[in-house]
Image 1 (tube, rainbow over the protein chains, first blue to last red):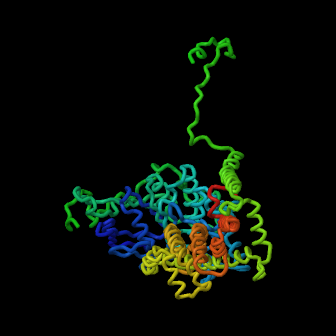
Image 2: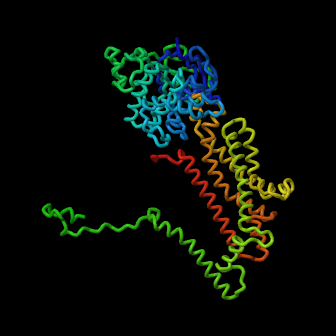
Length: 303
Length: 299
């Protein structure tokens, strides 16, 4: 059963289409990367998945149910920046979901329940390597630490779908590689469906089990805004660890990938070079399922 | 340059050939910075010049006319201070300066507290709730453009000549700009944070209490600091026009007798009070909102 289905999605801003005829079915546990040129609508697509914006037409379903009209805890989000709360320490950032759930009136816990919430995030703090920095404010953390915190915070709600909007775009290349490893381990461990928007093709192929390319299939040279983007390439990547692995009981965070290779027969390690992967399918899904990628004369005419 | 380069390698020291001096370049003015001590000295100089200039001018005037009242001597001002601050008034038995200070600060504090409360509530509503913004933003913007002193007569008519009208003048004078300032700060909280909090299960009210309010408070303190100047203006104006006590009242009262020896210490005292308030708010902000001031620094 598909975890996320998108049916005939259209998105227009002030009559200018950004996305058109987006159809998609994503299986549970898939790590989907979304790439495309600037302005191709990939971030818009992610905002639609999050219900941060509502589509002009079309439907988005998670586990068969239409998504709520506003952001809800079933979809976690990590933005490139501003994902954590600057006025809360690392610990307080992680305690926030428990406090919101435990106190509808104040959104704040006191005394014993507060202490229990604090103890509840101890494990998470140690796993993401922020134990030593637990009492610092986000402004005192490096970019990589902030994003680790943001990812951990988003995962606390156990979302069905984790959405990542260029989460590592502002990080140094070295830090980025570390973050990739952490993200892959969390993905395997939590067995969740991930959508990641990125402008870094290498990152997309390194992390994802499925890569979507957004682009315009129709162009009007006199009126560039006449048509929106859609999914032009849909690449499923075979990778030994692509399917969610057997669940380990409390798999250790460090050396998680080693445990992995013990299961899979010579499993491709997460940071292996992209050429080692084979493309399972390279099917340009043109709007009506036809094969042509040629710019076509419009059936709808200019808007 | 060439002389140095062509020196034989044997002469390791190369002292024999005089190096040409690097051209002495004076730094641009913008790159010449005073040291720590110089900063203090430079800051004190204008004060000394003002005081010194006053003393010289005062001495010259009094040499010409010992009865001169416009520029009293320090001794005369000292006598006035002793009389107003430390000698009970014959008629009321009060220490006049302290009674005036208490009356003025009560009005000022009341006005600031009410204005800050209004600014916080309305500012968050306007900055955060789209419907509240549509409803309230235009009217707050319009009210903020009314010259407050022009409606002082209305306030006296409505509230009478007591304390209420003076506090109301301060509130009306500063609350609209403080509200707009808080609303702007709230509106500038990144949308990402609000969406993130929604995905963590926050309701609108919880968003206000846990995300918006804590981040609005430092801006409220800043807005209050900026409103202190106007608040003093409205306080002194209201007291000058209609009051029976207060710092502004006293200044305008003794103006009839050209009592510069009283007015000047009062003005200095008001300045000290205003500076202390500003300093206190600045320290409060730095202490209470460490997260807003800790960017890039370790704990």
